[in-house]
Length: 514
Image (cartoon, helix red, strand yellow):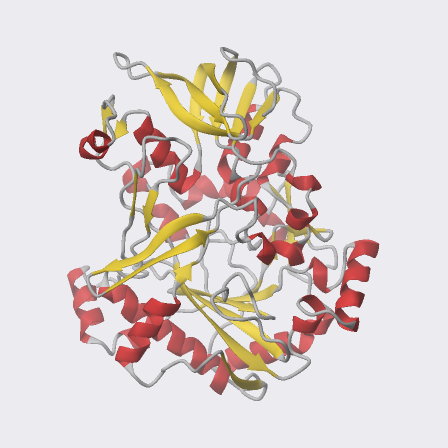
């Protein structure tokens, strides 16, 4: 824990030094006259941790000391329930920007426009896009992409660039592109102007071979103090005025408590799980939930911890012909691995500098969904609008990872030989909602997290058809079909709706999107 004495006062306190919290702190710190405290549970120096900064090591962060490793109810249905650990969230200054898989994807214009109903007139794409672009600086050092894409990063501290096109992966990229086009799907490099569709070369939070994260917002900010290695215990809220003046924190290592205060604002930014937990511990939340733990309500707010939305994914693995993956370069000892490591140590280039995700697809599968009465009925009940993308948003994000990804296939043993690809089918706008509730009044105990994936049967139908669509692309699409050897560890039951529904429930995971 950094030395901060109990009773210290700052202008602003940011509770949570993650992806959003650091951005807020950095922007506030542009005024040199204000003093800012960032409260963070993890380490303060992720830029000095090789496991975090080296792109090829990203998959090893799952379950590490830099991971909150939440125990999570993934699915809770009458006919099926599954609880798993770990659910990865970054535990370091920078939060999940230190533990994610790098992709820089803005979202669709109509999704931002939906915010207007909740946040007011200025919460829409046209008003927000400037700030999306302001937070980063875009690089295309090899001049491979249209010059107008420089608009996506206009001077912010996070350095982003198109994924390094590793020469070893050119056959993979070429085969995938051929298959995509053969299925009548478009190619697009500009998914950053509000419309997301087609196959695109991914932009990453990687520059010059190293991870970029929101910790960069705090670099060279002398008016920012970082209080790290602490758990937030309680927001200090006056019961009469309901004004929050500070926060009490507990040292993770020593159990020492201190309270710190803000003369202007306390800004809560602890992520989707810890934020509702702290609010409820502080007396803000559903009265019945607070009563369970003997917490006196200060603000009764029934929505705290409710309406949790996360992206379910179904990952699967295909064995491909040798020469079409990076398994031997990254996962197994040998001459290719030795070369990859030495190249990275020399100049931060080569396969070890890659996030392994070079191409990302955004399809809609209306024609498949329309075959099913349950979908047509849901669409009719939604005023004739597609429930998964009512304004033309893509149904799925498809990630094509050029090796066996242990982070998404941790249930299965890593193959000892052969070449593989991992495919992630990500349902972008699920209908099912989960919740976060208290597990204890002890701030050092994680909350109950119920993602409630597939609580709505329609999500199962959509995911099932998304997986089938992706299999069709890869096993029947021109070019790629010729390099697929087999499935791993076993075949997907594509020809049975019932078996596919069960496979979706069995194989699904969180997409770990920030």
